[in-house]
Length: 244
Image (cartoon, rainbow, N blue to C red; front, side, top):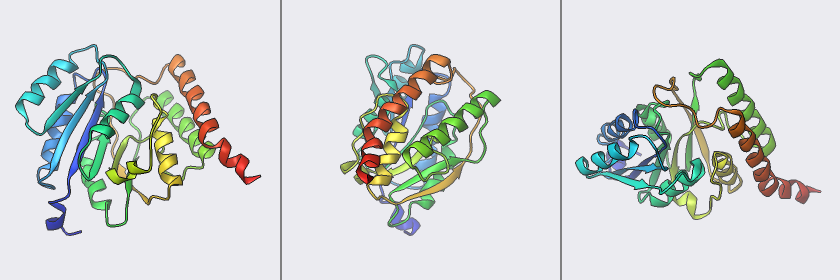
């Protein structure tokens, strides 16, 4: 599509946020600055997943100041999957972009996804050029990536890169159920199985500047593996049995 035609394409950008008070304002403002030159039809949504810091106060102020910004507050923490499902359900535009509210991804890299979203493409999946995390997190992240990729037959460079641009029509066929972080594997597995066209684009990854990871502790890793197995049993096992 030409740049002129792209001006009419609507974009919903949303951020799941949990205790991201130190970063979420910059993410929202960056989204506005990035989207404004690209499309005349956009909205920015933040799903506050029961934050206990000052995220709520910041978001309420942003919503007052910027007419294109909408905020949804969960009464309590519904999990990463719950926040994503709320974001997807609340988006009203033709294209849906999301990334995390902790600013480890740069919203300006949205332009790479935008350029890759050509006619016939349904999903642009980001992949990290390099991972800017401590070594132990990088190792655990790569292990999770390969486990999910092999267990679910995913054909992706980066399964756990939460920087995606998706046509909203995809969710007419793909229905998500997970409340935890395995929702990303569920989503990409269902999108792949439904035959949608996926392309990939490089994005940058930065060290966490505020707060702490909600994933990298033993209890959460154990739960993630348990949830991953349950998802595998629900989605992959019937496919394997069906081949016999």
